[in-house]
Structures are given as C-alpha cells and as structure tokens.
Length: 159
Image 1 (cartoon, rainbow, N blue to C red):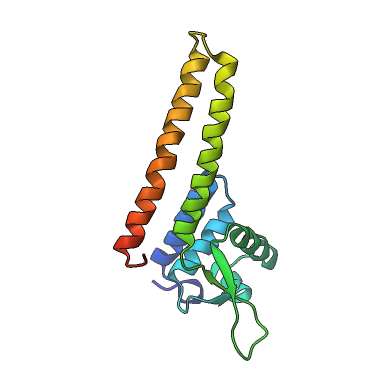
Image 2: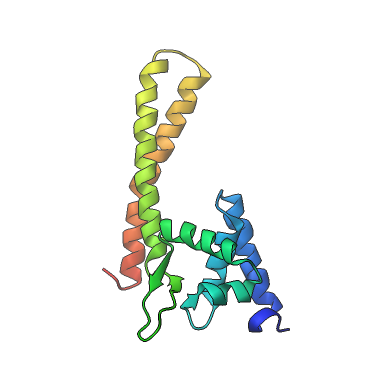
C-alpha cells in the first residue's frame, strides 16, 4: 500500500523503527527517521525538502535532525552539478567509521576506570568490583572491536 510520496506502509514502518531505536539510544527520533529514510530512498541523495515531504514533517525538524546526523558523520552533503539545492545521503563507510570513533571513547573509559582504581584500591568493597568490571570489559572491547572491524573490511574487500 503506497502512502506519502510513494512510500509503502512497510517502508514507513522501517523509518519509524529506525526513529525508535535512535531515541532509545539517546539520539533524536527525527534523526533516526531521516537516517532510515535515507537508507531506503531512491535516489540515495535527497534534498531537505524531499525528506520533509516524504516524512510529512516540518522544515525545522528536518534541518535540526540533518545537522545532528552530519555532526555524527552518518550523513553527508553531496554536490549536484547544475543545481543550488543541497542534497544529503548516508555517508559511505559511516558504520565502520562510527564504530572506530566509539572505540576511542571506549579507550577513554578504560583510562577513567584505571584512574578510579587507586581511589578504592585495597578495599574489599563493591566499588572495587564495579571499577574492575568496567575496566576489564572496556579493555576487552577496545582490543576486540578493532580486530572485528579489520576482519569486516577484509571480508568486504576494502583492505
């Protein structure tokens, strides 16, 4: 069943699911909806106006969410010859780049946990166990994720 701007009800459901996941992860629901739309739209480059029309939302909501997505480097602006309109798309490589940035944040958390250890060292307290668990978990993830990303890229033929 076709709805707004040739989107099917299934496509709109996908867009809404992306919005809900984004919101659950602490991002804006609209940014998730726009990312969802940009993942399934044809052509892959869309103007803010075409996004607004497809999703039936305000210009301000689209502008704010696109800014968020660009800061997070999930979406990029792409030039189109012969037009002054601004086009946006999901940035190629955004998923792996985002995970690599997350690894940097994880490494910072390892350092924070390590810095907290002397504050509770020698105590047989729950706080010692919590910090150790945090440190050990994030240390493991900081080592494992880059290896997984490298393996992913080799499997994708992008080494």
